[in-house]
Image 1 (tube, one colour):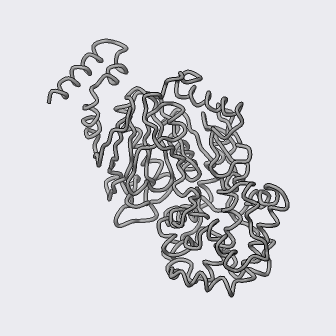
Image 2 (image 1 turned 90 degrees about the vertical axis):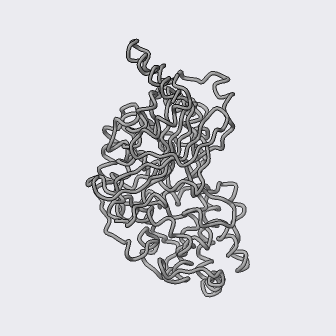
Image 3 (image 1 turned 120 degrees about the vertical axis):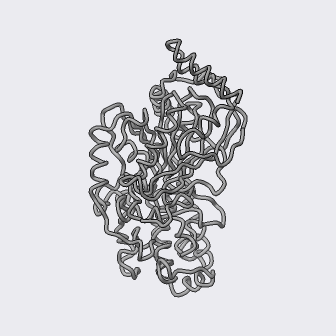
Length: 473
């Protein structure tokens, strides 16, 4: 009760004395943050912790299942809040997938560069942020953008600083779509390795990438691995069948799963690996087990299975219906494959979730980004296949940088020093901060884990079910 009275007095003072509103909000006692959060209609606190220099909340926000009919059903969308100060900038992080089962505090690169607060949002339809019953027609880029719009509007009642949105791969795409539909929500966007499949059938950029990446010996070695694996299908498929996994719900058979995994090997190699890893590509004289084990380490035989794919159905549904997916020719595998069209997003879905592709949303977004989008920063990796089809920024204070030799983990720190300095200065200018942080700006803050916003990033572990080789990272 005492804290509420004090908060009211501070706010009254802010109204009576001109120019003190921002400082008054920052001066509100920290205990009042809980009251401010719970006062937002539909928002509830699931948990709270206090890493040094911050407060960390796991939150739940009630969203309409269909924003076109807000009076209908609803669902609880998960998000997290890393709170530093009410007047510090806010970074809105959209991973494009689900949050961790037990979310913990971490900071994205923009959050670190701006010493900012951070709001991380779980994408609709990734469990548990899924309506029940679920109408999958409600899983569109506009519906998710509207989820984020409502979150920004709600939290602007607390935070007075500039807002920057960020995301990597599918999260980068999601941040672009939010900007497209609600351009006034944030003051700038940093989109990392965000693919842009404007016209799904015109994917020549990907084939050109694989024809030129790295050097010819490495490209030949990777092509040879794919050919050799398909030639040994009759001996390698039984090894996959012996894993005890299931295929009936999505791909149908172990043989289809085997072929899709082999097709994805070269893509996934360049997505997560580097030129230095070319030396480890097995020769055509490798044994069956050596070949099987190497492909398992690159892609993971367990991914293209019922167990591996189910978590990613929301992504594949979006790719199939709106986002698009990479279409490759695989000319070097002519005569060795059995299933035309297998390398596609619909293949990874159960039949009841397959729906027609809608080309107009991506064409609209691409045109808007090229001609009108203000203050957008795109970061791509030179050796990342997902970076082959890129967004083209407008001339409205928008920029594109490529990290030399980088894979799908490209970020500002991996740019050339000159480009990194330019990108950082641009970001800080958008956030209304000095060009460079003071040396001790973050000295009091906890050494939180770095969040690259790639929940399915390449982990060299046996748990292949936590990444999606064919998906938008």
